[in-house]
Image (cartoon, rainbow, N blue to C red; front, side):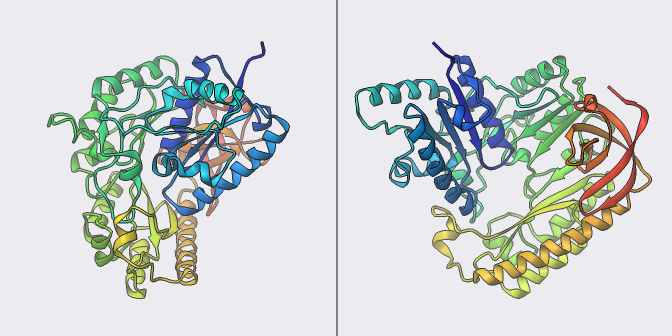
Length: 446
């Protein structure tokens, strides 16, 4: 009997990427092996995202591609999980007949069982259409992870969010805040350090809210970070931060010489206090800029998310966002057009009054501005020598690329055996595309 193989498509954030590692781990434990192409798989899984509208359309489009593969391989099964599955449930079967089973955010460990159920129904000539979407539990599902990298690892510290920003679907698809116990996180990071991992990324929809659900005042994000500084691992990152919840204690940890990387991704979303209030963000632009200033004093690179075209955003509101971007000078920014998400407060409360062409105009203005800022900030780094974790080959043959501690991309000439190593690189060129440099010999640090 030949070994069954699986292939996973992943949409969305780093948390979804980590969930896919959990799906892969569950399947490997059940005797499956990864396939290098969906055409070579017995089972295809979609790990989906619902934060924006476009990925949802993409999922249905990709299901059509799998339907074509099924014509050549009638035994192929397609399962859909993630946020879209949690929200739409059985509606997905009507949107694409190629889907065989749908599983929720807390049903990942059941995937092998769902596959067998689908096969049994198919053998009887019945429609597969198996639904397993449970209510999101109070605790985070414990999964075996098949990690995608041998030197970088993701570690979940929280799932869910209790902030209920008016535009955001996350609390409805991932549930309220749930924090792992500090001891469990410390044990996992310690084990990764013992295995030789160079970098761990702590994950949560809002890492700064860590511990608030555990009802113990000593359990908070700053104390967790301090505990992790005692573990002999070169780098610890985290994402994402929330301006409402980040504390001076967290900022203080970032200012100390330790293994916590000098990078904070903290979404501002808008520079207008009126819009921020209607978004239910819990802070003002003045407070946000104060946080940026405190972080910059400690050498921290701040990146952000921005939404243009929120339903009530006027041209004056948008100009305030432009002014904030000029003042904050972000190291990078993900900028999106507002996408109405059914089920959110904004979807029911506000009419999507900003025309798409105006959203596009505002998007292009901010993209152009941020590119200019990124270019200027990267040029300032010419002549510096920085620590780089080499992540892989660059697009140009003979070059490799990696990230600085403060999350800037660096490309330089180097052999493939440097991948996974920490090296020193002297920056020789900076542009909107990133940094370029020369390897400083002897090179490998750890």
